[in-house]
Amino acid sequence: MKTTLDFRKILFVLAALALALNATPALAAAPIEPPLFPGFNWDNLGAVEQAIDNGETVSVPGTLYRAQEKLENLEKAPESFFDFYSSPALAKSGWAEIQATGSESGVSTIYFNEMGYIALVRFAQCDDSSESLTCISAWVSEPTTLRLTPQPGLSATRAEDYTFSKKGPVDGSSNLKLPIAISWNKYTGPGLNRYRYCIDETDDDLCDESIGWTNAWSNTVIDVKKLKLGKTYYWQIQAVLNDNTKVDANEGVYWKFSTVSFKKLAPVSGARAQRLDVTLQWQASPFDDPEHFLYCISQSSVTCKDWVSTSSTSAQVKLNINTTYHWQVKAFDENGLSLDADSGTWWNFSTRKSMPRFDFNGDWKEDIAFYRPWNSGWNILGQKPLRFGKAGDIQVAADYNGDEKAEIAVFRPSAKKWYIKGRTAISFGRSGDIPVPADYNGDGKVDIAVFRPSNGTWYMRGMGSKAFGKPGDIPVPADYNGDGKADLAVFRPSENLWFIRGHSGSIPFGATGDILVPADYNGDGKTEIAIFRPGEGNWHVRGQSTPIAFGQNGDIPVPSDFNGDGKADYAIFRPSTGEWIIRG
Image (cartoon, rainbow, N blue to C red; front, side, top):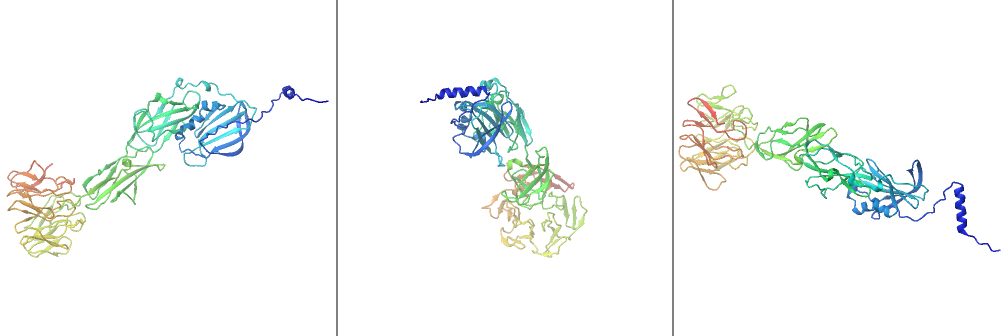
């Protein structure tokens, strides 16, 4: 007898039996497309069980995949990546979003496929990297009898129905110290995937593409790194939903804040003719928890080997004459965070090319003093009178040893010798010579020298002789070109002409009866040709259109830097009253 099997009836019977036994038939495996972005390369990490909460926690077997690509900034991933993982796109592939859970380091989203599969996609900071890299992983279950349902409201998300706003720094905040934390209120609607923020330097309510958005995961407070001092920033927050909708805080209006400035104060960049004991000054620390400062002063603007630590906002440094220096300061907080003053720009300044000739105490100010040749008496204001020399000597006080103090000294024509207090007499010159001590080689020390009117020749100790001038000329050596060295120069009264060695031609300036008063009146490090006209009581400085009225007939002009500002002051000595009068 032939038997025919009706498989449909058999399946019906088995199903009825299963119902009778209160059992659920196992689902047959069906081919599905796992939610793996096709633009990445994925590694199959093998079988992994995943805990799934469906009212109670159930351990479900499945397979774990991990993308080989690591994103330095999730928000800079290609747009096709976000399109692929948006809820609507995955829904078309059969994956319905069930739940998204955010944390400070990532976001995990659970999906369910009606064919009996569960998937968990996770974007999170990589565990094996100290850098802020994002790793992408996807776990896909084996066929399961679990049934998952979406959270209420997920399918009806309308971003415009919900409020979202920034908290701080409030719009317009200024003078903020670093570090700065930005914060915002939580997005009140459903479907939140993560937050992202943008900090821009342009006021256009847009995020500069070169800067881009930065992922903040579920955080609502972020410590912002790499901000600069003295800058104004514009910032915005977006809530990124699971369908890849971006919701702007405050309806898209960016807020702004400015950071505190940390700047150097003095000497200002480009300053000239600074003293050799300069005090560097800078602002207080921009940090709430300041630790110390490091400052460096160098003759190079590129490198600095010796940074000096201090808790003060100033530092006095000893420098060389006629030298350009570059300097910078860094502020540190207790955590080792540092910031360069003026956004890292080094300042520069130069020291004086020469000191006031009659500065006897080293304060870089001309001292009021006079020498009485008939009794060799030296009188220096603020010091005890003393005697040095003898009748007929010519005073030649100057800084001969480079200690920044003028030494009391005389030239004795009869003996052809120079006498410097504290040193052995030096034979140099002869009767009839005019002493012209000055720093001719720029080493910061005044050189012994004479001008011999009989032959128009200059003799400089240790440097030989130079013929420049002729009988009747008046020597007026000074640094006329600002190179830190005294130039050979003469004034020819017969023609009212100035001749400066190295300068082409002669310079007409002055008239008969004028008193020669060359000095650096504007502080540019160069001596200006100038005369005092006793009959008018006027000072005429070459390059200045208007004469300076100061003094009267009979006054003796004594210009020099009496206040230490690097500029020669107009000053006179009035023999009739014994007064020194300094303009200003």
